Image (cartoon, rainbow, N blue to C red; front, top):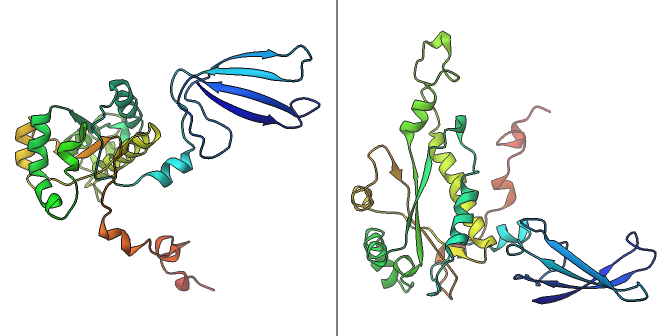
Length: 270
């Protein structure tokens, strides 16, 4: 139980009161602010005989969520993990959130393969070139992670979806859309970002690695031919890691990242 003292200001009672709150779950006390709960907590309260002090207990069915801004800013690609296992319920919550990522036509052409068996993780790490990372001074963050997620997408699923009756344009006689943008990759990126953020929200960390031999990964994991694995996401509790030298580049200026109205502002008519 984590006791937290909260001051309730004007607007709740005639006078400011001191509330002593205990959370039956993990609380992140680095910053003060209104806590956000995954589900409404069960609250019990008792006042002293004078009625000017309250003792509340928040019985949380799950951990307290972090503020969204904190989750985004805390997220980074981690390349080392502790040996601590991940509770299956935690992993299920992360994957359940990923299912809410957007997808064109609600195709839902994305999927994830969950790998926890060490011998398979070792083989995947080899396909990712983990030995090259280790040679450069990084930890064996792929084979060492307790869980590997392989994000996949299916172009064929999108093409089939847009031949369904509610998507076919009668005037085009069901002609192929042409797909000027491969939205199946866009949607997979959205799902992957949900996974990365959800992991941080659960007190975990995640990384990413490309796979150099996709056909070999497909064979290893028995992935259907029409499904494309896009890489590997190691997930676990973070351990001290070597930072990528790429971070020294820093973030590019905002005016190179955000373009308002048009790409080049000077081209706008006066």
